[in-house]
Length: 464
Image (tube, rainbow, N blue to C red; front, side, top):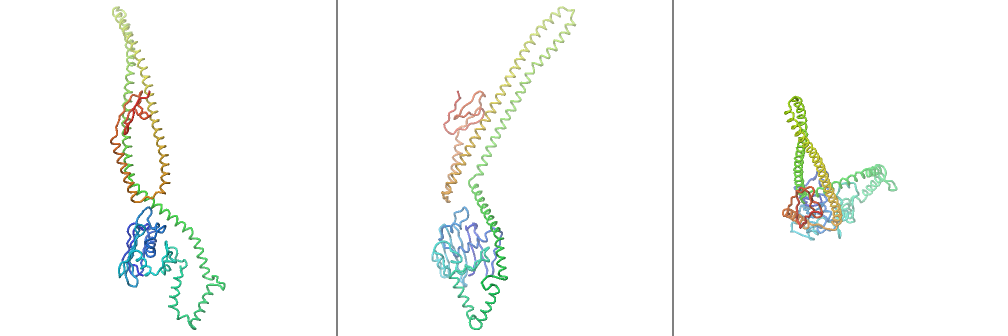
């Protein structure tokens, strides 16, 4: 048998079409890095030759790529005794088999029976066949990775065929004096390798010991290889999950959340601008409060100057009387200004206390809102975690096919559109309240300054 072309698609890790053609009469070497699928290609070749197209159960499931429900397809072009054949099989989804021969095209079980006749093998009654029993003479010469030194698998049929071939080739050599000499030579060689009791000795015994030593050393390596294979499988599953996330539109939702966060940040910047303006107004009020103090200082200077003028005008009675009147008048003004200063200081203290009260109320409201938000987020996280556990428990009993997944994605898209339509049709109420007042919405105090989006009947009221 001479293989000319191999075609594989959706078989284990070989998802994309793989085509190897123009295979000549010499030795063909397929080279590649680890985990690129060289062993998988040989498994596919054995599958198309010896496994029936209507194979089911675990053996069929093992052909499917991880996380996919597809139809593994394998094609093969080969020659036997110079006659060309084309074989193509599909497994799992709509299984089929087709064999193109020089005399016509065979399909289904007829193709399987013709293939058995050409390759001279006997398949099992059910399930997947074993190479040593159901692959004919090809099972004797099919060497897998790591089994090059394993014992030759011989079924009763293979043993009979091998003995018949040996007899047909060397039967004439075994007769007469030549046969006796050959027997003696074989016996002599046997004694070199085995003791009279049949136990190995010499280089053969040493080779057995070396094999046992190598087997003990290769055990940990095989375990490391198994762990590496598990990591590769986990990587494939992770890539599938990432692909699923992209298909579900999580990036779009994350960008929308980022946009909302930026809008909230801009709102916070506007509030900070208002706080800056309020601080400037506060400083202006402090300057106005300091003005009466300056007037008092000026009044004291006037009194000093008046005293000097009175000393200078000691001899002028009329001027002195006028100065006394001025002093009396200025003293009254000073008293009024002092009272005004006291009232201003009192008002300033009250303003400072009111400002402190406002700051405390704002901080309390902010902390209350933050506590409510965190509590709500914690409750939502707990609910989401419970739902996730329920979903994981339920998912093991739910079989998701391509149609169901498509319908789920369609429903999710409709949900997103419905949420957008609901947000677009909602009523927006803007608040700007006095600090002493508040409005309750569904049992929760509305912010004194801000927006409220309403999408269902809502009662706004002022607490008693």
